[in-house]
Amino acid sequence: MRTSDLPQRISRRILQDCATGGLQPGQHLGAQNLADRYGVSRTPIREALNLLADDGFLIRKENRGFFVADIDPASLAETLGEKPASASDDYHRLADDWLTGRLPEEVTEQLLRQRYGWSKAHTGDILIRAAREGWVIRKEGYGWRFLPVANTPEAFDEIYRFRMAIEPAAMLEPSFELNRAVLAEQRRIQESMLEMDFSTMPAETLLRNGSLFHEELIKLSGNPFFLMALQRVNQMRRLMEYRADVNHERLVEQCTEHLEILDMLEAGDNLDASHRMRRHLSGALKRKSPLAWSWAADAR
Image (cartoon, rainbow, N blue to C red; front, side, top):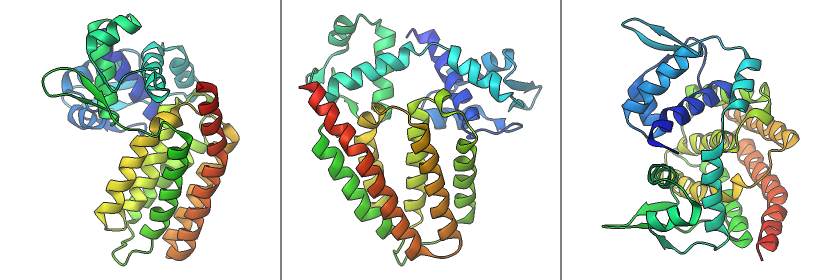
């Protein structure tokens, strides 16, 4: 990806957030808020906003900024389907090579450029994204180091069993405090997803929405160590989750289960919500574990 392509990538992420309900029609889009949201500077954000305004997806108001237009869902789905996904494909190619042991733990940008035939700017963009998602860090001085991730089926299973231990327990913490605004926002996201065509939604968006749901709920425990632990294991499992095919039936079931958990919390039934969360994670483990083991077999 050329440096000039960064606003295009950001514009796509904005459209994806519109598609999943993360951004609503009429919502004001501030450059700094979006920069914080996507982990970039305000300059490419401003370029992306102007691009989307030119295409009619945003409304530009003088002295007021940019607002989300009332976008036709079919037009939005068509636009997302038309936009090239080469950058995302390259990102997943790098992730897959790290998962399957085809890359050393430490690399240089020159090595990656030679291996994949990428430009300097494209390589830098992909590494910055990987660093933002928590599986690559820049070495002091020169080069990059890949961080441990769940790259074996055993580790993948262990992560889900760990989540089954901490997420239900977090709901029973004495410091747990219900925040109805947080629950309302998560309900809106889950209900919006049920109305979307999952086939038009990239795996990154689906995974981000799912992770956000669990992290927002565990944050209510009032115990920061629960949240820190969950965020770390979510980063570690992210790459293997990207490899899973989007299953419409399962995603509907997942959103429905999330809404059931929200219902129980809103009613003050934390014990029932805790049991439901454990069953929810146990079901995810039973469904995904065979996939992880098949990936491992294919890599041999």
